[in-house]
Amino acid sequence: MRRIQLTTAGESHGPGLTAILCGMPAGLKIDRDRLQQELRRRQHGYGRGRRMQIEQDEIEFRGGLRGGETLGSPICMWIPNRDFENWQTVMDPLEVDADKAEQRRLRSPRPGHADLAGGLKYARRDLRDVLERASARETAARVAAGAIARQLLARFGVEIKSGVRSLGPVGLDRPVPSWADLESMDDGSPLRAAYPELEKEMVELVDKAKQEGDTLGGSVTAIAHNVPVGLGSHVQWSEKLDGRIAQAVMSVPAVKAVEMGSALQVSRGFGNMAHDPIAFHQDLGWQRSSNRAGGTEGGITNGQDVVVTAYMKPISTLAKGLPSVDLDTKEPRISQYERSDVTALPAAGVIAEAMLALVLADALLEKLGGDSLSELEAHWESTRRLQRQWPRS
Ligand code: EPS
Image (tube, rainbow, N blue to C red; front, side, top):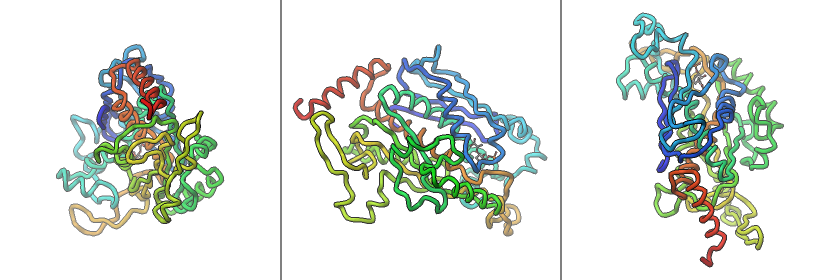
């Protein structure tokens, strides 16, 4: 990112998570309740494990705000891990009980998780040292930071939503959902299905996977609505907004593919069915009759909804395990299991929203410049005026 920087810290069963968000303008009022609401949305979802009954992600601000308003300085947020009290002897930052740590040592890596590659890379005898940071627990910090970004975007009329488009094979034959689909779905339903009529079948599939000690993936679509024209740029590969969105969304744990708009569908057909016809309306301005591109052309937002779908592999921690090897004996040994989720797709949608918000806020700040919200708003007005006058100006 160019104007915003986000650093997170913290282990899954350590004392807690920190997010430090730099680059936000001064003068933005932060609604803590809305931020908490995002954290609650991330914790919700059918198929989550017992951990979600332990955690109650509560945000504490430790820097960057005064009286609920941003100061332009780094915003530091802290989310305690309630589970830490059950893990302190093993996960204390300064002193651990060697026997207990040995008992909880991870020594048969899970295929698909960071365990083996991370253990080799960082030369850790206990793969827990990798697991703890690779855990998707870290995404609570991202959602907190994303909630600040979306409060900035909201000042410029941008809204973001998401829904589960498919789970395993269920829903794969459906088109990528539209903003209208996401507006009419029930955000609080068990699986946050973008097509509510699929919810029952999805729930049954999660139950089946759970019974069999297995896991499930699928796809989630996040959409940003009312996005200003002109974020990102065609002039340099690294500035293309679709590339920046793809990187951010691909970084969501277990996401292995990212699609803008209806890319998969259009890649299978001819050009005459792949693009979004251009029209001009005297009162409404530039119009499109479809949005197959997903809101960017040439890496620049075109005023259409920004539509991104993330494809998530099934979670790699299976109750029944997967073929692996014991690090000490080098003998075959099924990968270790303590507890985990069957699927975290509903949460992945909320995390994808947060990542999209961070990228769009970054691109908005880059486009408009300014250190304070009032400066940004003044720049926004003049940009809009110039865009309305174009190409006469
Ligand atoms: C996770 C494993 C589970 C999830 C966790 C991510 O945790 P535990 O190992 O403690 O049962 O619940 O997700 C969260 C804690 C969270 O807040 O999302 C993993 O291995 O990625």
